[in-house]
Image 1: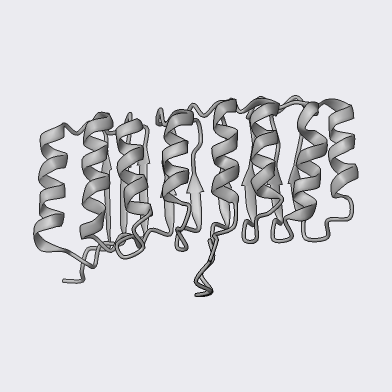
Image 2: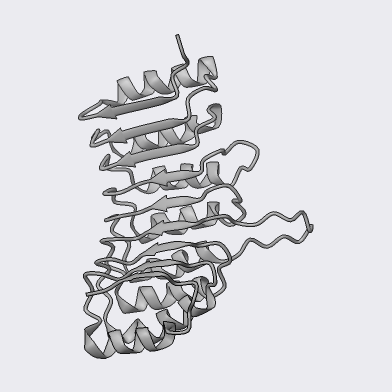
Length: 245
């Protein structure tokens, strides 16, 4: 039989069943598994951290933990894994609908500081407020390569839909965006921002030459904010798709 490359778990799973699954991953070192999707499992933060701790025994490239009550403990364990370039192979992470919060994104951002593998990160509705804007900006900063090894961050897609960042949080995020060298798609849909951040966001988009898609749908930019944003990005030839209402 062909090897199993993808595992999907839905609905409720208790701590014991997840622990048994993780023990199996540790015991057999099954390198064929590339995708692990856990959706609406309800096992909570402690069990989510058990999964994150087991990642170093895998060759996973895609991890989705959606609506499973993962929080700070999970964020710390995931951060540790992301910072270990010897172990992590993850190219895509989806953590939608978990109470990660601003403190959680601080931890994840720290783990991402020198990560040169992850390309796609989705954090929809993760309760990241304006305090998390700075850490999201840090996440977007280019990787420092003091040894001249040619390593660079390669994050290409960031989805922040549904987080109450507000204009303050989005403004802080732009500090990293304007220096970013790889991001192609950014979603700030429904992030509670208004026209106060429009100018700085536009300037950052103009500076980020790789960004081709920007979604600011569902916000309160207003007519004046939209005008300021478009004024700043009108010469951004790299930006081919912008969604705004």
